[in-house]
Image (cartoon, rainbow over all chains, first blue to last red; front, side):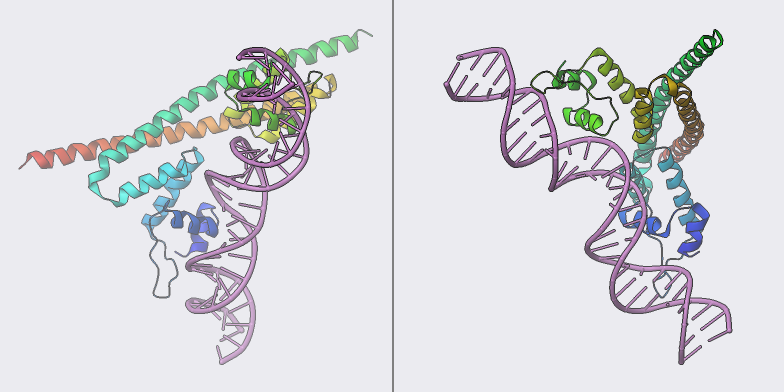
Length: 126
Length: 126
DNA sequence: CTCCATTTTGAAGTAAACTCTAAGTGCGAT
DNA sequence: ATCGCACTTAGAGTTTACTTCAAAATGGAG
């Protein structure tokens, strides 16, 4: 698969794909004899994984570390697991916070609802 | 309250407080006769609100709009409510996505757990 | 073979959200 | 009254995460 195809498939610009590879957020993609990237299924899985984790807000730095550990082989399974657990905990924490903020928004919206009703009442009075 | 106090209270740097005010993310804070900011309780409530909403990822731009609407008075109650509803929906959407990603992380962590057990088994065999 | 779109690289540019600097003012403590 | 720290402003600088650019090479259609 060439870069344009992959770009379309994941809705990530070619530039970003090259950038991700350059900074080590994706493992090196192999090239054909003339130096053009030829993405494998494996590469695509990484891209999908990275896109997903980025969308959840995992920092690029952490994902680079994960890719790095992965490339070092089986010796890093424990470390990778720990990294994922840490990120999961962080995500859970964020979700709890978001829940609270949602409640707060609900409350505020409700207040506005009441304010609007009051306003209407006052208008009808005349 | 002077800026240093407020900064400490909310753990937001003085620079950031001034910056927020400058871009309209906070209503104008009144100054004493010698030009030094004197934050009221009202100001503090705004800061707390902004900090909270920013932490949930609401864009600065949207919050600036909200502050702007607020300053225009009661005519904008409806618009403010709509703005909050939109942000709430967006937040809900994000939370659903985060939930899915949490599941995925759980699954991945579990896989690593199994991989580690397998590794241990292999070691014990010899 | 000729075009023209696509790809390559390294490097420079951009947007958002701060963060810092410079140059100056104000005020409590010694 | 003067030291020194907190405050002021305007504006420059930084960081993160891309994005664009420039110049050269490749690849497929006609």
